[in-house]
Picture 1 (cartoon, rainbow, N blue to C red):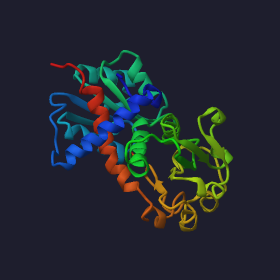
Picture 2 (cartoon, rainbow, N blue to C red):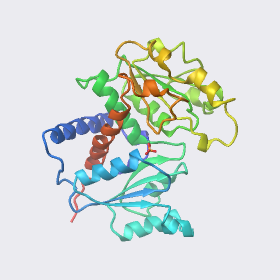
Picture 3 (cartoon, rainbow, N blue to C red):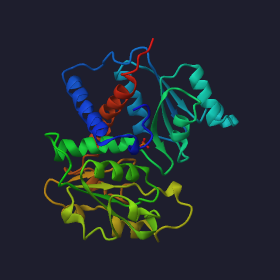
Length: 311
Ligand code: CP
């Protein structure tokens, strides 16, 4: 595997290998090794054309924990604001000897373009491109689900996972549906018809429009952020109405099976897709998702770059 642009770049066994490697790295860190020498002498560039807290910080921490040199590039404050193209930015990073580029971009397809045009020879990792994919988010979500619901490393057969809300604008949902179904889980997608993408019937998931009917079946429920910033029109009458129909509140959470977990990729709209009470409840694994993001991104960097012969 040279790049990680989409979940389709991974076979099922590649995905399992990333989850297993993350677990091993977790063990090594728990035993006190805060920093590993694996990527010493390599350069990882974080190229962020869109805002991020979790993804940018966790890639930076993951690369530093593997002893790589890390450069974080934010489009704001760079020559992108003077009109520099993605191609010229890629050529600049190539000249500087980047070994890996972690890219977040508002345009779907930007990571694919960086990986497959020949502008740059570095490994390309998609940190979220438009409404297309966010593969490392899906991997960290799968890692979190596995730790809670399949702790012996068994596969996801027999697990039912709900993904709820603004599927239309969600790269997290696309990557998760592809990954979780390939690992053997049954995926149920729930949301208003206006927030379902065209062609979703062809995706490996079941589609429902009522949340209340599905709660009792779910081993894990992933609430999606309502992405107002990507909405050009009105997709539902009001936040209050959305929350009434699709928000995860205390009474809905109480109808989940015992042991069911609640996920959210962040950032959350507390009081819209999830109540503050549920976000902070014993079922919530949202802060664990953030911690697991570092281990999973370490595993991705280790597998992609660690195997290169270099220097
Ligand atoms: N989940 C996620 O991608 O969060 P950030 O936008 O903060 O990186």
